[in-house]
Structures are given as C-alpha cells and as structure tokens.
Image (cartoon, rainbow, N blue to C red):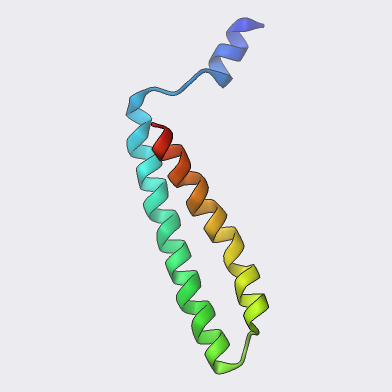
Length: 73
C-alpha cells in the first residue's frame, strides 16, 4: 500500500516547476480574455455586473491555484 501512496501522492520534483509556470501563464490569459469579454458585455448591456463577476470567479480560481502551486515550487 505504501508503494501506491508514494506513486500517487509523493511530492513532485523541481522539473515540474516549469509546467506549473506554463499553466499559470495560460490561466492568466484565460482570465484576461474573460475580463475583456465581461467588460464589453457589460458595456453593451448584454450582461449585468453580477453575472460578469460570477463568470470571472472560475478563471480567477484557476489562475490563483496555478500561481500558488508555482509559488510552492
């Protein structure tokens, strides 16, 4: 059982820091596109501010999570 735990739950090596950095950049781009799209939708009246803010929660959490994982490296 310990071998299974070590295989799936052991810490990752330093070589994965680049992977987390790339995920952080991609997540930031998603967040940026979401913010721009939400601003345009609110200005055009297609979306209210609350709905725009709720639509940005997911991309923000994705970005923050990846940034946190990269910072831990």
